[in-house]
Amino acid sequence: MQTLLEQRIAELEEEVSLLRRRLALEADEDAVFRIAARWSLTGTEAALVAILYHAAPRALSKGAICDVLPSRKGREDDEVADVFVCKIRKKVGKGCIETVRGFGFRISAEFREAIRPLVSMSHAA
Picture 1 (cartoon, one colour):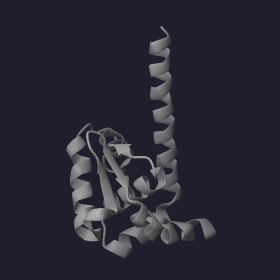
Picture 2 (spheres, rainbow, N blue to C red; picture 1 turned 90 degrees about the vertical axis):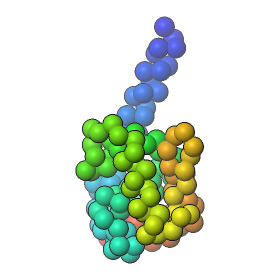
Picture 3 (cartoon, rainbow, N blue to C red; picture 1 turned 90 degrees about the horizontal axis):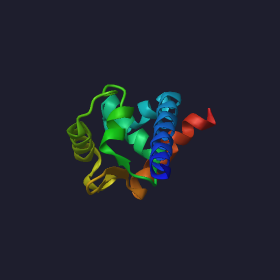
Picture 4 (cartoon, one colour; picture 1 turned 60 degrees about the vertical axis):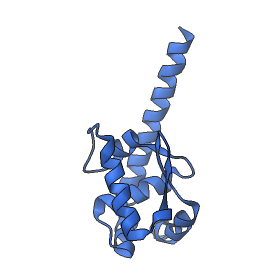
């Protein structure tokens, strides 16, 4: 009984975390636009970068990434995250997003620092 309860608590905590990331992304549309413009990313690619930025230093599972992406909500295709990360790496550089084997992805510390001024502009306005 206790194990089931602990498992359900962990699931709910992940769901709350996911909802917070969605809200942060929606509130930060200007930063997403600036990220897209800086590296010639599509809106979805820039949204993924923003999601990983807000989750840092934690990694996000491929499923969580698909759940949060505006154009992919509710889809259960883990390869979608792989495709978007591949496209971002081609445009920004291989070291911008790190792979966490068997789980998902996280933004590199260096790329996070490069993005910080673009996100800070939103909070200063």
